[in-house]
Each structure stands twice: as C-alpha cells, then as structure tokens.
Amino acid sequence: MKYKRTPSRIIFLVLAYAFLVLVGVACLAPLWHVLMGSISNPTELNANRGLILWIKGEADFTAYEAIAGYKRLWMGYRNTLLYIVAQCIITGVMTIMAGYIFSRKRFHYRNAFMMIITFSMLINGGMIPTYMVMRSIHLLDTPLALLLPGTLSVFNIMLMRTSMEGISDALEDAARIDGAGEFVIMFKIILPLCKATFAVVMLFTIVNKWNEYMPALLYLPTKSELYPLQMVLRDILISGSNNISTPNDAAGSVSLYQKSIEYATIIVSTLPILCVYPFVQKYFVTGVTIGAVKS
Image (cartoon, rainbow, N blue to C red; front, side, top):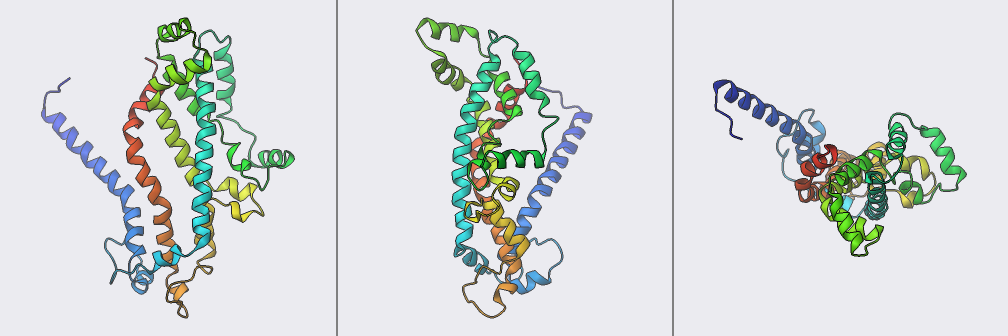
C-alpha cells in the first residue's frame, strides 16, 4: 500500500526517523565510550570524567594484551559456550515438544493447562525456595544447577504454540497417511515451517544464558572453575584487576591500567553476541510476529 505524501505525513516521518536516530545513538554511545576507553592512554583515561568520543592520547592496546593472558577469562568463555550449547539443545527440544503438544486441538483441556503454566509467569517460588530445592536435590556446585532451572520458558512455549497453530492440519493428516509418527511430524513437518520462531527462541536463549550470572553466584559457591564468563567479568569489575598482570609488569602498572582492563573485558565479553545477532536478526521480526499473532 502506498501512502500519499501529505505535509502531515512528511512531518511525522521526519520526527519518527529523528527519534529512531536518537534511540540508536543512545544505545551505541555507551559501547563506543567503552571501546574508545579501552584503547586510550591510561593516564588520560583515568583523568577523564565525561563521554569519550575518540581515543584519548595515543592508542594503547596493553589492556587487551593483559586480559589475553588471563586464564580465568578464557575459562569463563569456555564454560559459557558449553552452557549455551547445552541449554540450546535442552531448551530447543523441550520448547518444540511443549509447543507442539499445546497446539494440537486433539489435546483435551489444553487451554486449561496453558492457563495454569501461564500463571507461573506472574508468581514464582522466589530465590530462597529455589535455592533450597536445588540444595535438597544435590545440584549445588554442578553444571546442572545452571541448566535445569532455565530449561523451559512460558513465553517461548506461547510463541511456538501460536506459530504451530497457524499450520494447516492437512499437512499433518497427509503425513499420517504416509505412516509418519508424532516425532516425524513434529520435527520434519511442523518444525521447518516454524524455523523463524524457533530461531527467535534460540536467540532469546543464547542472550539470556550469555548475560546470566546470578544462578552461578547462588548455586556455585565453591566451584569457581565452573563460573561462566559473566561471573569472571563481575569479579574483575568488583574486585579489581589485581590478579591480572600487564605485559610490562612495572610497579603500579596494574592499578594504572585497571579502568582500561575493565573496559577491554567488557568489549571482549560483548563482541560475540554482537557478531551472532546480525545473522539471526532477519528472523526476529518474522518469528515474533508469527509466534505472537495467530493467523
């Protein structure tokens, strides 16, 4: 549909684009500030109190060299990647199965069951009861403590359910005539038609798991070797960079580069998500729209 270019519409478009530009600048400015600060001269960086729009002094990559030799950071990277892969597999399979079950009209009382699990979005047990449950089933200081509580999300189930409900029943009937079972229909017939919504669910899972640190703080009290990346980053930002050595190893060098190291660590921990998102972004609008509005 083409809209007539009336003066009021032109004014609206100008204001809308101006607002979007301001929102984009507000989102990118903190990341740009951290990036420029991480490669700025440490002396001028420590003296700076405002937004950094360009490199302060000569470019200095000592902070990146320092964290490159910090083994705990790369251990956190490894753990986080393993947690993400495991969580995507578990969450993906469980969400597909739950969405498929709740989307089938032959499943009696499906709306009643959906209402019950939707109620859990409003009220949950809370932090302390959840911790007591994890302790009683002996999952503390184990990787399962970080994986099992986040296995299913009601929001993701609702997205998959709504997306699968929009698929014609004729496809399922044709597959049954050819002798296909439930799992064949679910994974080979229904799922390929919901790949946009499934990609969005995986994106949500990856981002949530990448940014997650509270479960590790609660459920890994003594197993620091199982810490994800965000816990390592938290320790660096809160406890300082005393355990990180700079390449020149001069007296007072670590304290001089502390802010640069913090900025560089933020960039290193954010970069993978920034690289992954553009490849999934094309599915984002389509997946959320299909999964949110029943056709």
